Length: 500
Image 1 (cartoon, rainbow, N blue to C red):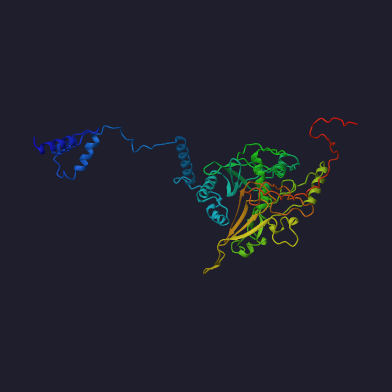
Image 2 (cartoon, one colour; image 1 turned 60 degrees about the vertical axis):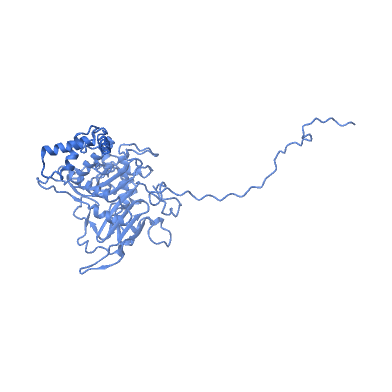
């Protein structure tokens, strides 16, 4: 056997080595046999495709997973993700069916535009959460009948969960009028009807809903009660995020967390809901409904300038103030003159000591009793200007993009912003009244009534500890009042008496 034959046998032996899926020699024979059988016109072009197909058919190993099948590592997390996506799609879905008549919604706040103003003032939720809030408000408006207007009131922070709060105005009759000619029965103090103001008046001027955020449903809060508002002024309690949880506090609060939340919303509204001066006026057409406002004709044309908005004179309260009774007005005593003289005299005495406060009053008079002598500004408010402060001239008018923000110092988290001819109110905080940034009363030196020392002025950071007292002077050492007896035998040895 020649050398060439030995080399050829070695090459054949190398090509016939089986690695588990066949040998190269067998694969080449199959390709040649397939080419001879099919006789393709472009055999060279189809060589790679045919080789891949034959190799795949001769594969004897474990098959790979189906590329179309998803591999889920955490089934529970994947289910939550799918549910979140479905809820998010329901939020962005149009509120009415395209094939049916369009649904008429109330005036819903354009929170996307207002969020841009709040962002300049350092208050915001982020773009994604802001979009979810705007869509959630639209969904609430579509599902609520007889809704006139709706806006985001704010966010109450809790220990376990937070509350997003929406504020709306419902239309329709407030109460059923008595039959014609029937005598009107007065509401007696102490009765359940006396404890709750009618819808559209006082603390119940608006209706409120709360949600956990995202696509969570909106839950309507009960009407505010005067007894709950009075009790809330004495309670220092952080919300837990559960409307049905009890309020564990001293003194005792007569209700659940939903009632405390509603009372705190009423208190914050009465103190911190502002409007631009000259934008609203009392609605004379709504004589039966107290504390009703309407936009002044030509309010946008006469909108105050930026210099005015940067002062206390440019802002007024747009919600009724609350009296010590928890209501915004004293009761009508007509019909109680006979048989209830004691109640009438008591109410008249309180009315003389604490007159009702009207709406649209300037904020410059807030907490005047706490204002130091010869001090400027207000102890209850701070005003700052943000953004571009330049003036730009256009063919029809002059425009500025600056942002004016008014923040409350006694309710940390309450802010009102204005830009151009727009203004909006928002509250983000723990729902606690704080007196850290205001001076105490001049006469007594006590802090602000009803304030909680739990947080600092921004509502987020704990208070700094009080100043440490100076170290006392070192006391002079004194001798013992009963000194010990002197023992001559201090070494403990026995001593014999000396010889005489």
